[in-house]
Length: 221
Image 1 (tube, rainbow, N blue to C red):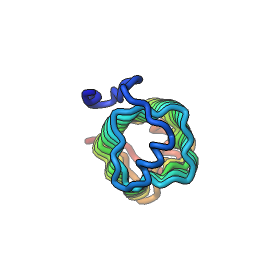
Image 2 (image 1 turned 90 degrees about the vertical axis):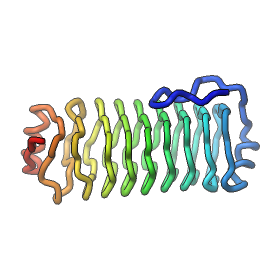
Image 3 (image 1 turned 30 degrees about the vertical axis):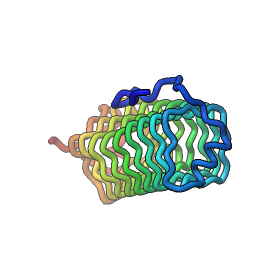
């Protein structure tokens, strides 16, 4: 089967091969394994290690991941749909053309991850850790980042549409060219060392709220 389209289209809902849970566990236990061109539906993985596996053109639908360590894994043309992540880690993972849709992932750790192109749509990423991640392209729609950490992240192209950014911690991360005009926040979204939003698009109400909360100023490009 051909590769899924680039961008945020994600993999198709049906692929030719459905993998069972035992085979998936066996692949993940091998180390540097390849899981490709497959659909995994309604599986439960608890306290497993993926051992830097590569997932390519894969659809995870309705799966539960609890305590799963995806650290160092590669996700290419992957879609997570209606999945739950509980105390999972994707530290140092590479996410390239990944869709995460209608998923619950509070506390998901993506520290030092390389996020090449990723969509989060209608997800709960409260308390998520994206510290020191490298983000080339991230689009988030209707997603909760309450009390998430994005400290010292390297951002290139980020789109946030209708997201909840309450108490988002971006210490050491300059927010250049980010549009948050449709987002909501009820507490500081900047740490104390950044007193300026340069090239950041905000609504008039948000500008007033930021000024009152942080004393920041909105700078011209």
